Each structure stands twice: as structure tokens, then as C-alpha cells.
Image (cartoon, rainbow, N blue to C red; front, top):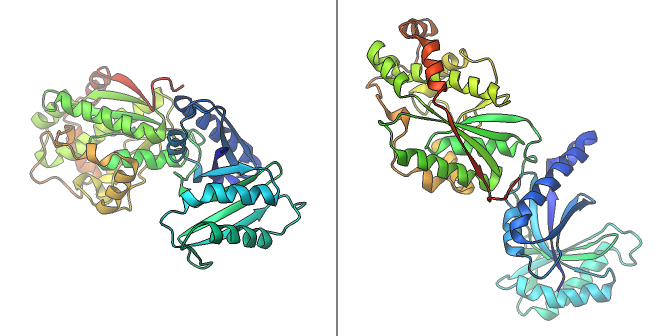
Length: 395
């Protein structure tokens, strides 16, 4: 039977004069993501995005799962298509709905009639289709207040559509509709979540990872690359830049007071991140910091690290506790990789008693013991880059 995927826009519909630009961005992204699943016609009309298979070889299950991971879409459902007359609608309901209602005890019908020339009103359509369901699906009952499933009948200008239930989409704004940001990507739980959260707000994400070989292993780098690949399920494409901090950390260890190791390392990271961001046309830094979670994430420490860069720093996890971040990591599919036991550079030369309330003047005094610019130049020269894609042919 003819079946399509219908996607509902979220806050895109509130964008006024810019709405068409957001809708076009969303359609382009879906078209890019569709190619592994077959040939689809993708377009938007009447605040709905339509994904129509063009032949029987199309992978509807794969396309459905892909659509649920595209930012800007709040609801995704598969729907049967028929001619917009009650005879066809009722026939399609008898054929299509029994399988969709297996295991459901209660239902209601919600009819929407955007074509006001249709001879029946929305309540009349609901009553007719409700009667079909009651006579076709054994044991099911009507519950208009708290049903197990809502059956929706939409009568539009061209066809009628019948669907049962709706799965949530990824929400947010279309990718690349809000500029580009550079994510400081570690191997932990928090930073991949932060990157996905900012991508949800329309940001194009680049990533910067720091390593300290031989103190950190090749497996640690592989872990981060795996995280980037997992994030691509939502962000589609990511360039991952890697910088070695080995000599920086050794110099901090040899020349500075131990209590300041953590905050000094963080300063170097932020300075290198800003330099990388400016070279690759990123207009903000993104970190996975959560206020008070560790010594470098106290308010005083954040004040110090913010003082050494001259661009916005977004911290989408700042008000989340660890359990909330873990929930998001599971939702984005990065949690299992994040907890693999490979240490990153943040665990190298960890002080026994790191400063949790560092004063800027004291930190600057420690920083003066180092040839900061030379160390930054040396570290930056070690940069390598890998590109990760949601699938190899993605463009």
C-alpha cells in the first residue's frame, strides 16, 4: 500500500520572515541523509515535511530512523496515503490500522481537515473512522482522554493520510542554521553531549581533541574518533583536530606549583582552542563543563579560563547534574564508548590538591614561569585532522 513518512516541524514555524530559509536547510539535510536508503522525493508543504519513496527498493525503516535523528524535526510518523474521499479513507483504515493497533487497548481518532471543501466535518470523519476501527480491531475501546494511541486522519489538498501515533524527533533547529562552533572533545561523557546539544540549536560542529602521547595511548585517540563517529548520527559531519599537549604538560609539571597544574593546562587548552576556532571559521567554543563537577569547573576556575579568550564559550551542560548528562549521553548513543577505560590528557600529572578557587593574579604569576607563546606555537604545529561522516558518501 502507498506509505510515506511525515515529519512535523518544531520552532522552525515561529521564524517569521526567515522561516523559508530554515525549512530549506532542513530539506537539504534530509536529502543528503536519504541516499543510503534509496530514492525519495522530499519536500515540505502546509507545515509538514513529506518523504515519499520512489520505488519498492526504498528502505523505509532506515529512512524513518534517520529522520528521527535530524535536528529541526519534532515528530516523525509513517502514514498510509489514499484518495480524499470517505470510501477510500475507510478502506485504507481497514487495511492499514489493524497491524498498527496490535497490543493497544484504547484509542481515539483525531481528524484534521485542511481542505474545507471536504463534505464531512472533522468530528464526522473521526466518528466514521472510529466506527471502522471498532468493527475491525477486536477488543479495542475508545478513550478520548487518555488513549494508548491516537489515530490521526488528515485530509489535505491532494490526498488523505492515516497514521497511528507519532514518534518524537530530535527537535531543535536545522543543522548549520546558527553558525559554527568548536567543541573541546575529550573521551568523557560530558563533551559529546555538549556538542550534540549545540548542534540541536543549529550549530555546525568542529571538534578539537588534546592528547599526551606516550602518557595517553593510541586507544584513547581511537576512542575519541569513535565518539565523533557516533555523534555524526546527529551532527552528520565533523572535522576532528588533534593537538599534542605532551611538552606543555611536562613544562607545567617541571616549572609550576602542583596545585595550579589543572588550571594552567586548561588555559593552554582554551588558548589553543581559540586559535583553532579562528583558523577554521568557528565563532564560539563549546565545552562539556558542569558547574562544580570537578576542580576546573568551579565558578572561580571558569572565570580564569574565560579571561584568556576573546570569543563566546558555550557550556550547555553547565546546569545539569551527572545523572542528567548520562541520560542525554544514552539518548545520543555516546555513553557506552565514553565509559571505556582509556585515560585522556586531563588525567596526566593530576595534582593531589588542585586549586578550586584560583585567583587570576596567582595564576598569571605561575603562567609567567613558562614561555607561553613558544609552547602554544609548538603544540599548534602538532595538529592533525580527521573527518568523520554519518556515511562515507555524505556531502
